[in-house]
Length: 308
Image (tube, rainbow, N blue to C red; front, side, top):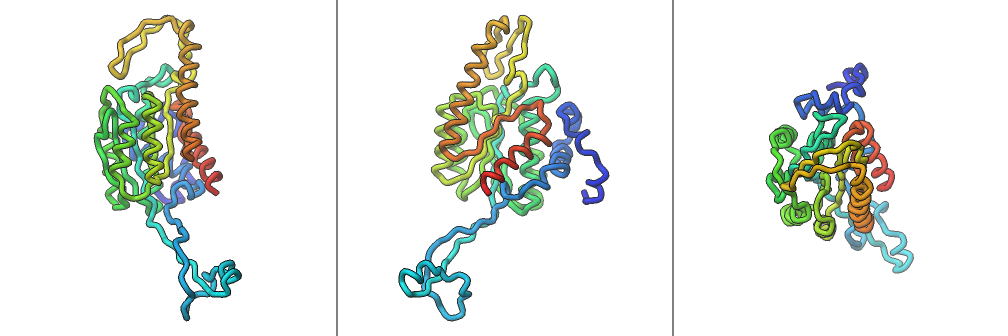
């Protein structure tokens, strides 16, 4: 899609969740999101080129004097050159939760599941990474790591990721913490791991998995993806709640349950958010009712400003 095409398209009319739900092809959906909004964002959340100081060595004839460390010269009266280690392009691994709870879709938009939102995020971020010559990969998980597509910038990688995201079924349970530890054992190069999940799991195990990845010096973004109903609990009449991860169905009076539910949700998310902050991990709660052209660029802009 060229620049002239972009100027003539009103992308906002495609990016409402109700409209996105009608777009069958995930690659089209992701392209609309990215081409319309994300590509113009600051590049630093994705860009993998980085230069880290490695060591000093004595100055030799022919060396560029701009690399002389003048502070060392001031202390030693000798010329030393700063040597740097250039890292390869960034490797992005998108870890998407495909457990049954991700199949939930709320009252306002029954056609738009949390899994649809998660796959749109993953496809969009993979698209941007690959366009910037970085490497993108995909991890699909539930109670274990089901599929792992290792990061690559091969021209076919985009299609491979899209096909996997489009075909993945949901499994009853999840074990996010165990999966994060699996991922930490699988990836060899320092990477940016983007976890996209509702995080409906034991927070202590999740935090342990996050800590393992950070110990391996991987960067990490945690996007807790929740339906608006799960965030606000808007139910008013007697409702049958279905257990989505092998739990029993329960008929309840929502008004009596609402305060206890919201308190538990806030406690759960606060525990994970606090741990992420302490471990220097970017965390954001994603509401599936908010179009991705708002939530995703907004989060990435905040991340870019923090990194800068």
